[in-house]
Image 1 (cartoon, rainbow, N blue to C red):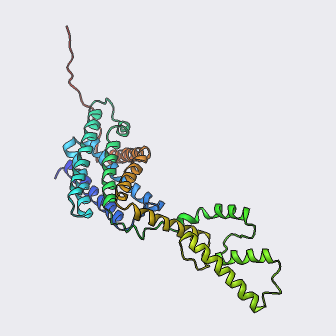
Image 2 (image 1 turned 30 degrees about the vertical axis):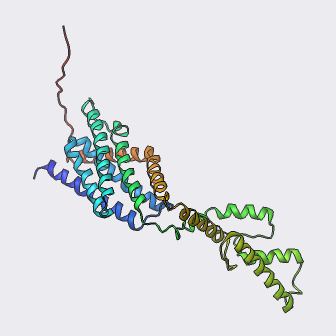
Image 3 (image 1 turned 90 degrees about the vertical axis):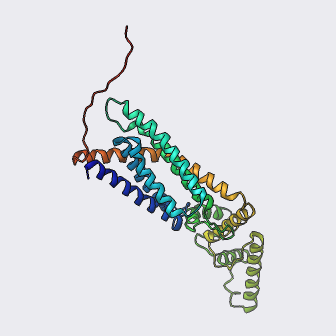
Length: 309
């Protein structure tokens, strides 16, 4: 087996492995609002795009297409048996061919080897092809709209700012207070020093009843059953998740399309970063392979037709 064939086989295998890593993680573990999940998927996508860009720099289109076909095979293997996935993979491949043709045309017309043109021809079209696949997964993802929730950490980051605002118009509120502690602090501020009456069972019973009444009133108002042990992030999270669940349940018929479009646009919005990182990684890999003498750079002559008199 010749060196080019071995290298081609390596790119095909690497693409297939990256495909399995991406789509298995998307299907089983990813959460689109978790930054680490998004970063992990973006990193894998960048690695795959770098492999394809490297293939386009070294081989003609018919050979460079093999890693992408391998990636699509991994997608179809893990995504499930749907004709929509097969159709999406076909359209994705056509987008790749369009970008690959432009990329190879630019490479063939360069006097010096450069990866920069891949940021305009090749990488953007490959990312569009991948964005289509992600959108398809989002469209058919089995979401239970009645139980969908945002991660709790989403609200923990915003809690200090919200607590500062609440403390500005409710001085009795202290960061980290539970709901019942807040109601008790409010009662203490209204009644003054309760040190003498706290020991009075009758007063304590009335106070407990008033706190319960306020808690139940708030529960009815926001549509969430509260126990009194919730802190601010818990309450905001419960309200947001309940609203999100009601909203998605009401629009469950159009929600998949909205999710798919949002994912597609979200992936494309990162193109300015992902394209350049992928091309940069491909360039670094090419430099390493040149240093290891796995690939080599050579000069060739070009025959060109011109019109003369």
